[in-house]
Length: 449
Image (cartoon, rainbow, N blue to C red; front, top):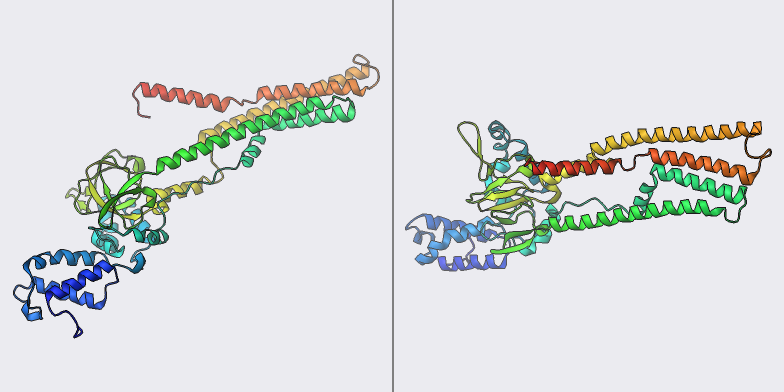
């Protein structure tokens, strides 16, 4: 140690306290002082031999707590620094715990992993956090940058134009558009009637109204659903920062935060329990199991059952008890976030359920059959008109554009009518209503739905 170092125990402790208050990185001199002070405290009567002639009994009594606080958390300038673990390490740690639930797998795969070997003390040291004081508010931005935000992004909202285009893909509307163009062509160019545009324009107007009403309604419903979903996901969480309890939004929780859990809380991030607790976690929302899970350091019974496990998963529910936990994964790095991302990738381009797909297939078959009968009907009527016209049994002896094209148009409208009647547009709605009534009846019968 340098010659200008502290001359006694009081000066040494004063220097350490100043370094801690200024939140500077621990220097070699501070580390050497802590080591010498720890040795002096553990060796009774050896204080004088180390060059520290005097120390008050009260300050020596509090020395271990001060030293442990200094070693629990290695301060970093401005709240930034290099952490021992990165975002992927923490996500893999959570996945390892979730995928290995039997006593045999835990012994073989989990307990041999260095991250679990080090326990909560190793995690807190690697993430530079103190169990007693938590992190500082100044570190929030840096930790968000390195470990991510506690937000699972929603899919971008479908634009109003995409909804309109999707509505126009309805076979009935396509057929009506075709009929309107035929009506306009016959009325304006063939019959040359001053009011010949009226019928085709009316059909097109009806199609536009249906598309606009349906797409705007869907857009508004989706916007309201997204707003309600965002409000539902924004929960209040109690964390320990700068030694004080703070209630903050769950979206501001970062890796390294010490969260305080109690009965009734919904866990918004993946955590590792620290210290003593009596937490009983309901993981039914994540695993489907109704048995409460006790949380604490891994403990296996002699019969091969898992008594305690330390990881608390995002989306689970605190059924009983209170306790502390250190946040190790947030947002898309959590197990729930990872699964949601994989489900979104699997469902990309296919946003309909299996029941909806089967209903679509059945509707397509019926639609094709209806279109076939409509075309057949129009064809039969046209052939009948042609034969009757040739035999002189129908209409006039010569072709009259004002008369005969109107007849053809009426045949076409008859075909459209058959097609519209055949298409089961109300089938999905009828099935939805039937399922809703079935669920209500099951609830009345006290069945679990």
